[in-house]
Amino acid sequence: MAKTETIVIADAGPIIHLDELNSLNLLTDFDKIIIPETVWQEVQHHRSQALHHATDLEFVRQSALHFSAQVDALTPLYTLHAGEQEALHLCFEFENSLLLTDDTAARLAAKNLGVTAHGTLGILVRAIRQQTHSKSEILALLRAIPTQTTLHIRASLLTEVISTVEKNTEV
Amino acid sequence: MTTIVETQIPDQLWQQAQNMVQQGWINDMDALVAEAIRRYVESHQQILSERFIQDDIEWGLHGED
Image 1 (cartoon, rainbow over the protein chains, first blue to last red):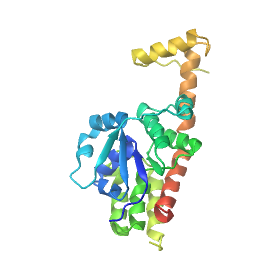
Image 2 (image 1 turned 45 degrees about the vertical axis):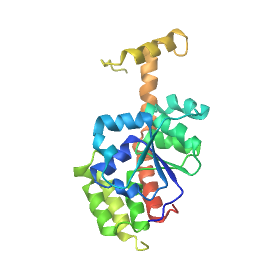
Image 3 (image 1 turned 180 degrees about the vertical axis):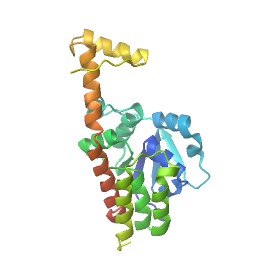
């Protein structure tokens, strides 16, 4: 499979949620998946098996080496946790980086910092576009979210999401 | 109208908060806790959360990477 040039900087949520869906393989076409040291420890604590997945997916465990004053300034404003903060610092270290997070505050901070960010649902639906999974496979995963994962999403919104994906005829 | 709450806060975090009050960054601990909650609520508004999910679906279906 051809890899994209995008480097993913992952927060704990999507790694845990994708593992809960047994779908971490959806990340394999990214050039590199970096897990900030603080996030690594968080995932290790809550769902260690996600870090040792038996696929060809390899995570890079990495600490931030440079610290952005912009990130530091936004940290108290958005009440960012240590992992989210380190992930945002790392986003400034790499070109073509994509922050992977399901946390609203982290998404908001990323938006203010000009950092591209997406979450678990985006990664799931992207697999249809990338033709790594069929639409029916992804719809099954979306339907499994309430019972199989710890990702919280309003039931009616998930229904809307599923409907949007079902109706989409371009993929 | 106000509500009295009882909560457990890690010692180190509490000490940091007390230091900020002592340094005059905010009037007192009541104000600091209220400000922290207000900022948390503002940054986690459901509407934002749902907008990000809709953005995700749009990117997932029609993005370029």
